Amino acid sequence: MTVYGIGNPLIDFLCYADDNDLECLSLHKGTMLLVDEERRSGILNRIKDKNKNISCGGSCPNTMVTLKMLGIDTTLAGGVGYDEYGEMYRSRLREAGVKDETRTYHAATGTSIILLTPDRERTMNTFLGANRLFDEPEVNEDSIRNASLFYFTGYMWDTESQKRAVRKALEIAKEHNIKVAFDLADPFAVGRYRSDFMELLKNHCDIVLANSEEARFLSNNYDAYECCRSMGRLCQIAIVKDGKNGSYVSNQGKITRIPLYGTTKPVDTTGAGDTYAAGFLYGYMKGYSPEDSGRIASFLAGEIITVMGAQFTKEKAKELSEEIKRLFSSSHS
Image (cartoon, rainbow, N blue to C red):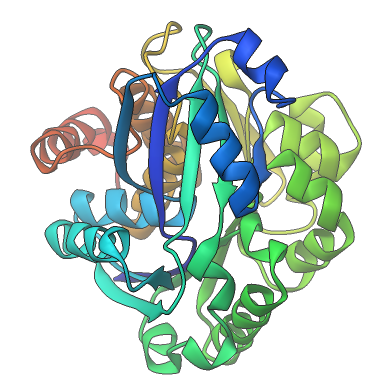
């Protein structure tokens, strides 16, 4: 069992900020904004005197790392630079045991400045850097053909090169009957590429994941349950995460509400959606029902928001893997 993912390896700069910081920087709370080098420098200048936690991140990479730590083999494709952050990232993949199919370019490694406000919402400012250079020729056909599932996110649609790479991977997956999972990833991405995303769900995807705002942009409906119903008409399994209300899983049109696990007062929501995706795919790959896979996902998301950062330690992941077996063994066929 292997999951092949194409994503954006990013170095995360996590920093506490307040609403005044966001206002001064003209940032919309809780979203991801693509920035150029000049804009990145301006944000870094604003937070230069604040404490920053530097770690390896990126949406798809977070999911691949968490899956591997839970015991599912994963491969990550993407772009990094010939710089200290590129080496830092590849070292992290080696440490986690993720198969590294990143390509190294003469460009800066991508970064994401994550501003964490007192309400624990995170606002991301992403500089793609070397990721913009990852293109169709870098896609390893053998890796996809030998995988059980291909995973990607809506962030890939922000560059034509990455879009081409994903399209090629989708063609290979279709030819070899490889399952496909797609996380919409960001409401503004859905707003920009709604027609493309609808086509992807209809013609290429077996599983789609979204939060309530992303689902609203896609389905033009404020009700998370109804959004899940609409998305469930487009592919076999649809998941809508609805914050403190839990989540909904549509499996062949049948919708199940998944309760929220863990605290309602998170320490840091960075990576909660990525961890939910990892939990769902873990359950799916291990043969759990989509409903129990949703419960596993909710459980893991509830755990990641109790700590700073978007990835578990190896020790914590092992502990959680054992807890999943204990909690869900009776329903696992």
